[in-house]
Image (cartoon, rainbow, N blue to C red; front, side, top):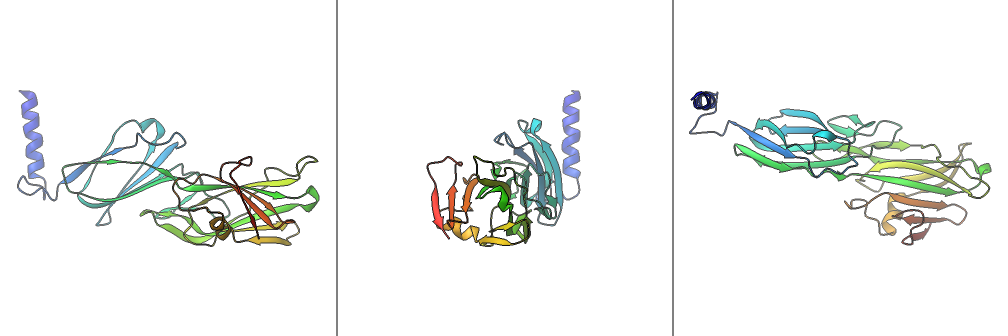
Amino acid sequence: MRQIKATAIIFLFISLSPGCIIEDRSNCPTYLTLDFSDTPEEVSDIHLFILSEDGRMFKDTIDRSQFTDLYEVSFKRGKTDIATFGNVDRMVYSNGYRIAEGDDADNLYTCFITSAYRNDLSYEKISVLKNNIGLHIRVMGYASDSLQIMVTSSSIGYDLHGNIMDGDFTHRPEAVHTPTDDEAYFEFFSRVTRQKDEALTLTVYAVSGTTVIVLPLFSLLVEAGIDMSDESLEDLYLTVDCALSSLTVSPEGWDSTEHTDILF
């Protein structure tokens, strides 16, 4: 009997809520269920944003321990944008996430959905994809060459609608390997987001500031058959030999037999 009374009270409350009546439920909220169970193991947490047509925003952070649980939120019916950003660490929020000045991108995973939710109950599967490209770069040379690199681009992140943000990306990574007697190369690592245009460039320079070579990296990668917008694209392994004017592109590692040599 108590349960029946409670159900009746809830039903009465919903029917008498402002703008929400039995005959017209268009102003009632939708109860949106989000499923994060397909999230890859590489993702530690997700920043969630839900935006309605009238500018309202809901945001939350979901920890990896919650990915197996269904996530439920009450939200205004109608056209809705859902934006999810996984593994945000150093990137900066600005109606989305952009790369911090002087830094490179996070190991970013994203999902962007635009849909119209008009029913009482709605459901959405969230499938985040790797939206960053790690550039493992080897530059052939000797310790006496004291070489450094700079990676530049005009793509700096993603807004809440999934559009690539435009800006100035400049990253000068420290060498993770310097030449030894047996290994005559410098090794660097930089991470970029997907690219909106052909501005991605690699500059090799000496510590003195003298420019050794400037490579239009995006164009060279296209020449090697690399599609920077390919969702399945993993990290890239690049070997630059300034003396031979060559760039070797290896999508699967330094020792990959599937590589392309480009003369520049």
